[in-house]
Amino acid sequence: MVRNTATSVVTIDRFIIEQEREHPGATGALSGILTDLALAAKMIANKVRSAGLADVLGSAGLENVQGEVQQKLDIIANETIIKAMDHGGRLCCMASEEAETLIPIPEKFSTGRYVLLFDPLDGSSNIDVNVPVGTIFSVLPQKTDGTHGTIADALQPGSAQVAAGYVIYGSSTMLVYTTGNGVHGFTLDPLLGEFLLSHPNIRMPETGAYLSVNNAYEQYWQEPVSALMRRYRGLDGQRKAMNVRYVGSMVADFHRNLLGGGVFAYPANAKSPGGKLRLLYECNPLAFICEQAGGAATDGTQRMLDVQPTELHQRTPVYVGSKGDIAIAREMLGAK
Ligand code: P6P
Image 1: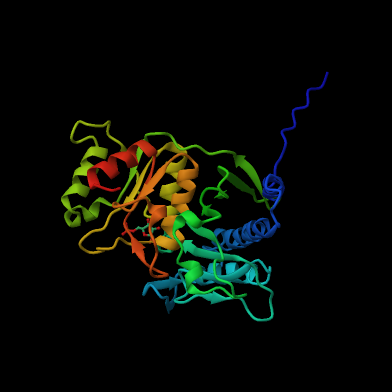
Image 2: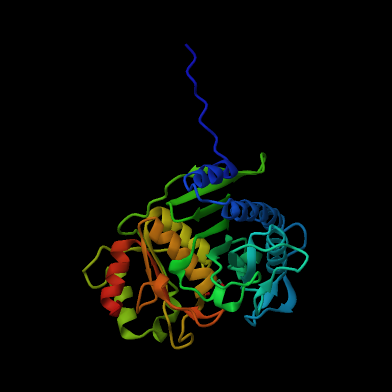
């Protein structure tokens, strides 16, 4: 007897449709957004993979709103996402780390009732040294009445998100996302050009093996933060020491901790009193994913997803990871 050894190959498109069927009232708009984002991810992956060969490396010499020297791939990734998303008729506006203000949907296209926030290529300063970089995205429901979204639609707490995800361009290209129904990972098969379900229902261990923090800022931390990092590193005898793993690319550090358990922390410090990382399109989407995988996230004073944004590009301190380890952070930092 020949056993059926074929495993069911689930493409991301099939998975998205099957998830949509679990919501009878779904219009298919959110499914369309996710499908279009997967296409954009494949296009960006092509560029990132060939960056060393196509002389795309090096800065384009342009300044972005963050005042950082913009890598050419930043520009390409930003344009790729905007062009992939602006005509689908599902969005009322977009916002990007690379754009100072809201990105409107062109008048020639129809609009929809969702807002897309994204960091097109996080960690881009690592591009030239071949360290994994990533794309991060967040989807919010439009709350204003017009056909075109306003800044009020973008400035919603992370708890309002209907979907969030990231793409990591590493040893393989993976897309990980949630729509509030668990966290699922898809690995790009470069020959097929398809994202295939490789990590269904990702769950984050209750306590973690890894601590991802840039210790170079230790001299700038406030004492409760320094005490917390000593705890994580086992120096006060209260907890088994965590292995310090810090790539300097948030998506890469977050992804390893999501799978293996751990904490990513970028505390406020004397040089970055409000923290460095962005609330809307970096910390909120990763916090949503983390909570959906059984983890937690705080800004050091409250649950990350409860923070009421006031500015599009506002920064925040961030502690995100295994639930038990974030509970230690909340206790030692006096967070709600
Ligand atoms: P630092 C990359 O520039 C980034 O935005 C994140 O991806 C990363 O976690 C962080 O900054 C690294 O910052 O100050 O440790 O170099």
